Length: 488
Ligand code: BGC
Image 1 (spheres, helix red, strand yellow):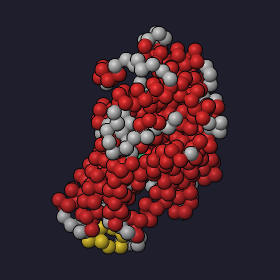
Image 2: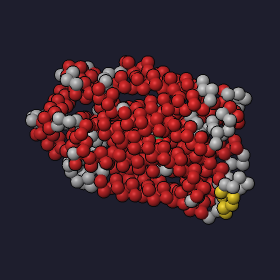
Image 3: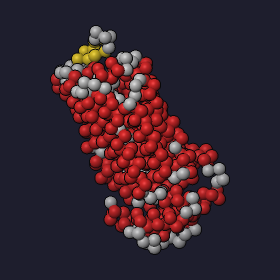
Image 4: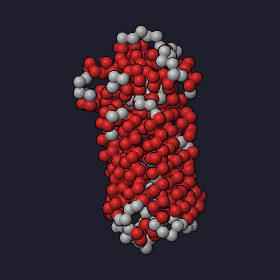
């Protein structure tokens, strides 16, 4: 749903069928139509914390998928701009909600050893959605009717229908159940997913004790749950989650996802519209394929190294793209738009290669990590609200970039890539200085992890013993590291 949503317009708005039917929307109106979606996402992500806590993660996802089906029907049946916009806002609201609740739910049901992998699968689905929707639009443009846009907008409902019917078979989040005092059900869910159905499995017993103890501790400490986010230690952590999501947008990935066709046109990549589209479409394929290494290994690599390495690699590739473009010959075309003749064929190929390498670097690192990290760092009582804030920050910046990127492409031209290269460098420094490693710790252990020096490796045995001490439990944890290896 997320991917279809992001990709559902870029390939449609240039078609004659769309332009004729919607009376050639002006740039401003088109900006509004585009932005209706991410604005909806922003609001959806902001509001999702409340129903996720009150009515469960599971029912919130079911509700959001109903909204998405309705939105897609409105879009596919739209008879003008107003209905189209209503449909886009509804789809946006739904994706705002799901993009916040899915990683939250995943991290609450996942065994800690493969939590990163499970959330990375959500990112993989996003990349599949973007790619499929791009190629569906590419194919639909050859129909000589309004089907050119109705087909891609209607097909969006398919994943929502699958989620709507399939989600009923999923368990409630065990941490949500425990928080609601439904301990027996929570134990059963943990037993089903971590202990082959055996509620006496030592791992299940230990986990439930820890969850219970942390909830009790939380209740005694805090009467106003959401307001706790303002306490210094949580406000700081929330700022890390929010910055991470903002940085994920400032990697510049969406310059490529939304505007690669404009970029390749500007740089004269491909001899005609079709080959420009094909070269652009390759990016979406690279994005899907290169997310796979993250699914396989993000829980081995760890979060810090992956983010630092990814940001430095992206910075380098963007720097080269900007550099190669700066060497080209710039001129204004008939429509008054800046275009560039890249210096020579090698430079042009080098530029395209760097764009693909940039996309590959994002896909293996910040794509998944942008969702993994914020979903795993908060204590239960503020987790939903904190994830909701960080997710909405992502959508806010997504929305802003939507507007400013085409503008900057014309105003600062090659400087755009250098600006984003600079952002990538800064985010590598920020992660190095402030973000502790979180792989392999349980959600209940995060409070202790965040009390340590983020630049030092946190000792697992110390964290386990300290949690047991605080929770008043005996330190009888089964050898977790050996088990990690088994699972991974
Ligand atoms: C980002 C999106 C981006 C997508 C690309 C997601 O993680 O949040 O903004 O378009 O990755 O794969």
